[in-house]
Image 1 (tube, rainbow, N blue to C red):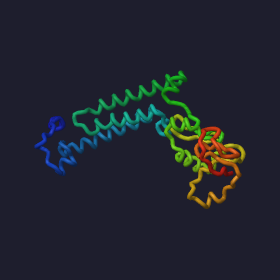
Image 2: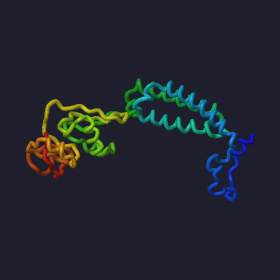
Image 3: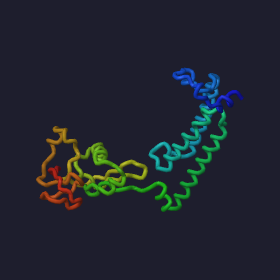
Image 4: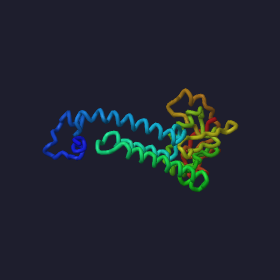
Length: 234
């Protein structure tokens, strides 16, 4: 009873002592409440493990937007039963079970309705096609060129011509499909790495620094209209 009254009592301005260590560490609750917090946390933690297990293996890997929303919602649901003396644990468990059945129901409906699945989970987006940056898609997904180049460098790729397709998957990961043969393209190596750049072969052609299109001569880019060029390498 004392805990409940303490939690509902709001401190008045004159009651607040600046830099009061006890208030800063324990708040308004008595020290004995720490033991209850420990027990509450253990119970809620065990329930959360069970709920996550029932949500499926997808929660352990790359997750979709709706699954990310569920994770955030679970965090909000779990915090109160663990810390608030006037909130029961059963309320949190009921809320978690509701989230569980809601996600399972939505996934089941999406499995039988492709349009609903696309609406909820999204779809893959092409960011590089035949060695050329898809600028409209980059802008729509707010992904920078340097971020994209970093992904390609992690795949041991040195220029855009080595990429047949690069997809941004619905769950946020990147999938890279390489081109079959060597071809001139825009270098994605950092300009300050002289050792690697010196090993590249200048093909005598020009690569657009904006989109990666390769042309024989400079002028307006046939793809994006820009006029910023650099040597195409292979």
